[in-house]
Length: 67
Image (cartoon, rainbow, N blue to C red; front, side):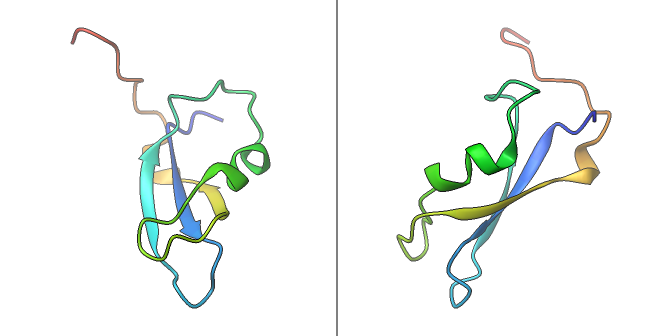
């Protein structure tokens, strides 16, 4: 879909900590639901997250090593 980043919200609704990160570490065909359980919140220590596309990164080129 051309999105180069994701927004990750803590699964704990009381915490609501979020962060926008690059999606480059994962292959394009990776479903977001497959990576949600891997996240650990840096604010509350809770496991799990709600991961959504960061549409503001659509169309931006991928970062390349050595540049």
